[in-house]
Amino acid sequence: MASTITEKIIASHAGVESVRPGEIVTVKVDFTMSTDATGPLAIKQFRRMGATKVFDLERVGLFPARRVPNKDIASATLAQELRQFAREQGLKHYYEVGRNGIDLNMMVELGVVEPGSLIAASNSHLTTLGAFGALAVPMGSTDVAYIFTFGETWLRVPESYRFVVNGRLGEYVTAKDVMLQIIKRIGDGGARACAMEFVGEAIEAMSVDDRMTLCNMAAEAGAKNGIVAADQATLEYLGILGQEGVMFRSDPDACYAREFVLDGSDIPVTVSAPFAPSNAHPIEDLAGTPVDQVVVGGCTNGLIRDFRLLAKALRGRKIAETVRLVVVPATTKVYLAALQEGLIETFVEAGAVVLPPGCGPCGGSHMGVLGPGEVCLTTTPRNFPGRMGPRDSQVYLGSPLVAAATAITGVITHPAEVA
Image (cartoon, rainbow, N blue to C red; front, side, top):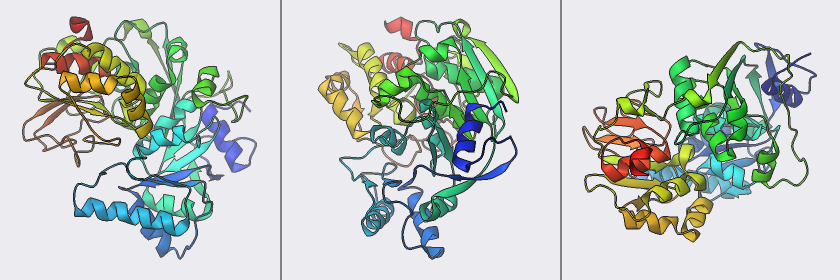
């Protein structure tokens, strides 16, 4: 029976030959985790269930990343709860400040993600990990508490949407631009509870970092998961020798609920205006908009490739005096690589501030929060009202290239203008 890649991974973890959209199945989970934002509730539910031991000490992780180093007593208390539970249980995957980072990116670095794996955890942007040919499904803390205990969960098999991006992307066009245009086309929540599968020449030509950006923002379309079939680039990125995971691919005659075809050469450099990712425009429509702050980093664009693009644009330049540039490495490993390559020096010399690895200002609860009425251009994934500050602050979404150009000029600017 012909199946999509998502259906194949679900079937393999449900122990059945095949599954169909709409079926509800029980699946084994390869890895699960929580953060300092979601973990305390999962731990509370774990104890309320009467559980005393997690199902596997190597397949449960706790990652402080949201409000660390702690900004106040409340955030310190949440981080403390994670720390104490990790020590009590003897978890292998707990990483203190100084060795930490955003959970999604940390999991890749730690080797717990491989093609064909199934990961369920309490982070809405867990969809990022679909870039490795894995099924990564965000869940609430109560569901994760159950997984902590039993190592399994239930899933409703999603319908699959197929997004074909043909041809070559134009100069200065990145995966961020592609995804903003896709969300514009289908709308916020336009793939609600569905699988978003990305294929085509432009996708195959993307770096794995760029594929992570695509799958990350599947969450903004309301998807259950985003996924790109693993290939040789995936294996090289993961450092896998031979074939460790299972490199599932959709069958040629697999059934999709909807299919969308885009010509990569027609996709413009794109910026999403407040207050939704779907409010996407060619940058020319928004050029000249003054900004108070620019943010580069987070789970969407906080990897070394993103920082190399930023540094290339900033080298030998200063940011505008009216702008604050905030740089947020996704993980300690990314931070160290940027330091070793001299990128951090470039950022600081340009006038940027580099934050500790983690989520930073993305959720509006930590470093880099906006003031009343302020405007920010950010590479992070969301720009809803009140996302990074007061409800009258405004957030625009763009790529690291757009962020660099905007930081230099002080207004939303096409990257070609500072090249």
